[in-house]
Length: 219
Image (cartoon, rainbow, N blue to C red; front, side, top):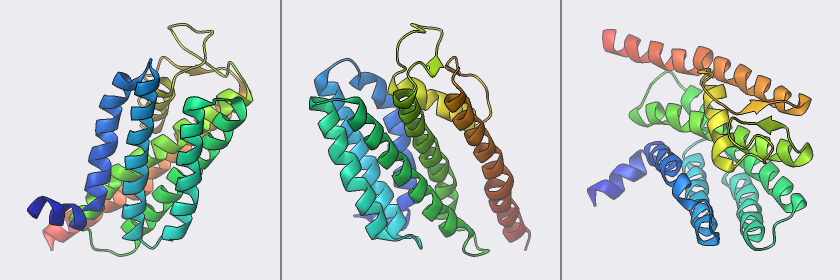
């Protein structure tokens, strides 16, 4: 089938599309146990696609699987028997997995001086992987130091996953539009690291790919 062969040629594109669809679907999954299960299924799909993308890169598949399986398992345990320890460990595993997948895609993009179509899709996919990774770090910080993040709505409550993902995207993209604000030292430290990561990504990765693309067209 043409769409299947296209997906095999461009796994980074599939990963990017599913992640962006997840951003639109996540709000529909909040507020019920069924919604949380649906949320975890979406997360599994993203993890599987990330592993598939890593297989096409110099990254080691077994590391991805070794991080992804326990992360998914703890996510389902959290649905039925939630505890601070489960949430914290799950967040660390998820963050490590997404950062490793992003690192593998970075190696894939920077491995040569030719820019393929899939490498251009990988630019967006890597950005979203990093955003997901930092969002899980925020979850860990919120467990470690309750009240680390406040927001315009219900400021005394723990921030939801969608709020922390929103904070991560706005911080990584340097738009500064988030109404979620870190108020603990740990929260601010992680936000500063993500701000640095966002600037470095644009300066070193995006600008390089744009430059190579322009050079290829002018050649």
